[in-house]
Length: 173
Image (cartoon, rainbow, N blue to C red; front, side, top):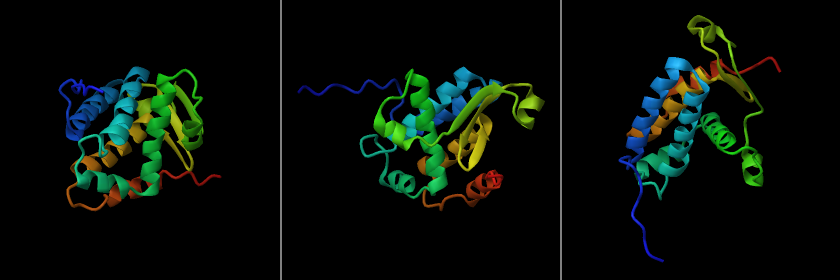
């Protein structure tokens, strides 16, 4: 079969797509809207799943860091898959996607926490047991995780990301 040229549009490395993700995060923070949420989760999932891989021009160090993610961080990145696929496809029907799904509840856009109240901006909320997170919280963690994978050099996984997520653990159940 004839090899085809890459059809990427000026984004050629995981760093390039991470920079796009940060740009999308800035747009998301302006509105917390559904369209901006959609763009953010699709880019985040494809960066994590496709670009930070052997096929995706990632460095060996980036792939190693991806494999060293703490389980709860990997779970939040799996939530990006759930949201991206749920947003792109009318109904999830593939067994492997349904089996891996970590989100048990999604609601919104609503005013569901103090940030939404103060900003007067409804946003999406997801439950990824044992966490219930707004898109604001989820996007901050996802950017932090992906920043460590893409730009982390020889640094260990940032403790503050683990502590901050643990502080949001729902202990009511």
